[in-house]
Length: 117
Length: 113
Image (cartoon, rainbow over all chains, first blue to last red; front, side, top):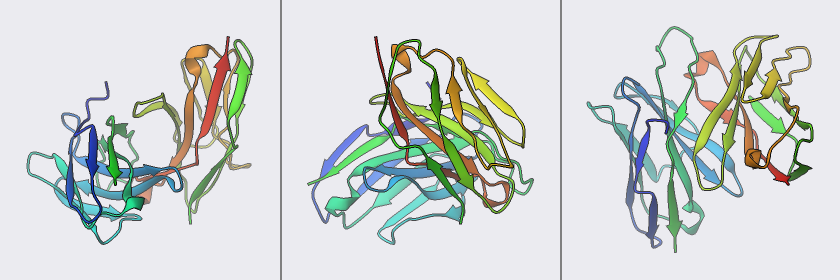
């Protein structure tokens, strides 16, 4: 158990809908990362938050957005869903002292499997 | 941009065989290197890491050495077990890019009894 929790575990929805994925980081971790794992694109970084602020953006579609709340949990919102959005979405957390240039280990949650029908 | 390339799978071995999974990287700076493992139906677990050239990461009998001259981080294990069957991901993280991980495509390992 990594200490990172994600809900729900599975999500089945229809095209055009909107869903919210939730992530609770390990206790004490200030940084949250979201990744998408799909068969054709592999594992791709989407977005990072540190202590409530967006720090880095990757290949995240404009239809997707995220935020980190004061209690440090994070939500990934996916809207106007398309068939191609079906994937495993992982959240990871780490203690990354922003500004120090240090790299810390990321601990991954179990993922949310999204199926768009 | 930064990238990671892994040998293609699937790799099928007999129990107690020697394992090598090749990984090479392209990076502009001085990345940290990682191997993550994903067991069927589970999330990713950190297997080992190395943060500077010539460092050797090791865990559970697996080893990988950070080779800057060949930009490689090959994963090795002397004697694999059936329980090692999983997908293995090589990844890098640049210190000046917030720590995001860039992954290789993954290599599926299947170990037969």
